[in-house]
Length: 215
Image (cartoon, rainbow, N blue to C red):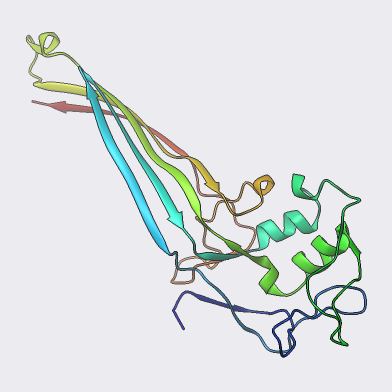
């Protein structure tokens, strides 16, 4: 399997591949763990440009990462504890797709708490896998160069000022909006482990200011 494969607990399935629920309507854990995702994205696209007008220049870099899975404890905890808008309908009920242990289609209704707390948060790891597709405003900069007439009586040939920002906006479009989740995180610390989030914070937003002088 690829190095970026995610290994964890799976939903128990019958010989036809149908998920199996218990008598209370919750998914059963398979006795065998297996591959439940792959953190490697399908593709990555970057769009950048610099626009110059008179003494001003404006630059930007937009990143779009398509696909890639992430096992997110942050999202599952927010859902399981009922802390985000997706869980606000406390009277909502669910019937999980699948069959019961006798092989009949599942028709047992569970409530909001059982779905998010029992299944998503404390159920098979497979239910904590999310698509990490993300659009990100990675970089923005605005610069201004002093007109040469202001430098005629100085030793400088050019002077420019630039304000910049990094990671100003992101949206993981296939994750719950209320979680405001940033897949750009590594729950395993320094190393080659990717695709795991263990209640990590999002990547930081940065601002900068620079002055460039040439003689």
